[in-house]
Amino acid sequence: MTPTNEQVLAALSQVQDPDLRRDIVSLKFVKDLEISSGDVRVTIELTTPACPVKEQLQAQCEEVIRALEGVTSVEVTMTAQVRGKPAQREDLLPMVSHIVAIASGKGGVGKSTVSLNLAVALAQTGARVGLMDADVYGPSIPLMVGAEGEHPFTKDQKIVPIEKFGIKIMSIGFLLEEGQSVLWRGPMVAGTVRQLLADVLWGELDYLLVDLPPGTGDAPMSLAQLAPLAGVAIVTTPQSVAASIAGKCAGLFRRLNTPVLGVIENMAEYSCENCGHRARLFSGTSGAELAETLKSPYLGSVPLDPRVGNAAVDGVPSLISHPASPQGAAFRDIAGRLAAQISIASATFGN
Ligand SMILES: Nc1ncnc2c1ncn2[C@@H]1O[C@H](COP(=O)(O)OP(=O)(O)OP(=O)(O)O)[C@@H](O)[C@H]1O
Ligand SMILES: [Mg+2]
Image (tube, rainbow, N blue to C red):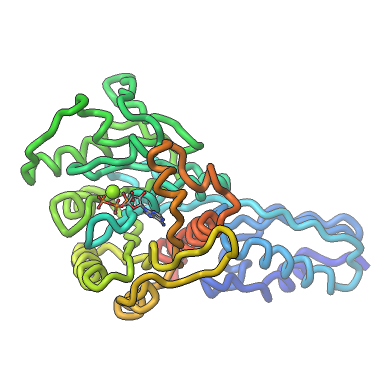
């Protein structure tokens, strides 16, 4: 007996997305169901190609369909369509689904390193990704991607972002002459952030990550006011002051109605290249503790790896140069969790 569409859908409705806490049928993830005698083919469309539970969902779908009477073969194809907020499509960047700020309270905790490697990790899953370096005081992305001294082209009076490692990159550093320094005043910062959003040909993107300068100054304020942010990820190190300033930074974003998507801990652990032994280096507030204080998700920890310091100088992200390192794995895991939190924060289910 051939199973019916209704029977297959009923079976699939037993499969829950653990992050969105709804079944995949009511989430409208089920596409292109084809049944021909006992052969069942179905496509499941997730909200991000970086979904950390993709394989788990696929296995569950196969299992529940296979359990139906009359089924002889099952083919479950996983795809993704990143969905933006339709109500907000009148803004400066209507073709960008999710704008995500990467912030910290304290300087030097690794925001730029984390932003760059997360952008690369998301792009490696198949997402269309941009990285905007909004650190007006010390733009470091050009050096980190080996593009220092490059000047982007303009097209129709817009700036064409530089493409490297599968991501589109734009930095205030590309717009300044070499050695030029600027004494920034608040309105100039706001103007520059606006320019990086509106005057750059970002095109269609699933994610635009924005690397912010440290602290709660003009750049985060301007960004949160100019762009509909999906949220902010807070980077911290377990040094004594870092967590308390990071907490203030999270507070500022919340006051600007920007959800805190989670906390990323950096340089907390050293993982030995030779024996794999891991040791924690500081005794201050951990990323997990800060996440708990902020009542926001803990997205993971990036171990300290001396090769990363070199990566910045070599101009190649460590995820590209050392993909199999513990650090590479951490970046990929965190990218998946961040993408899941973005999907949760922007999920509009109509009920
Ligand atoms: N996990 C890590 N392991 C080793 N070195 C790291 C790691 N993360 C960052 N670094 C190094 O620490 C320094 C600071 O990192 P980064 O520039 O990313 O921080 P930041 O928060 O963006 O700094 P700023 O506040 O100045 O913008 C850099 O030299 C970088 O290479
Ligand atoms: Mg930086």
